[in-house]
Length: 67
Image 1 (cartoon, rainbow, N blue to C red):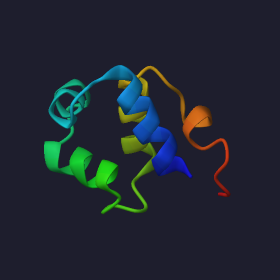
Image 2: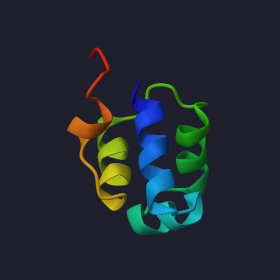
Image 3: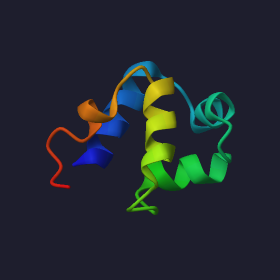
């Protein structure tokens, strides 16, 4: 699932939600909601911005997700 994949990527970088928010110019609350699973269908652009900052790609995150 994409959420597990993005959480693993975040864990590997050691970045906090605040750091990700600052680097992506997204509200910290948005980032927190995505990583908590509260936002179950985020915009692709939002995911792309987060994944890019974490050093990954959408292909990595969505690899085992049926779209």
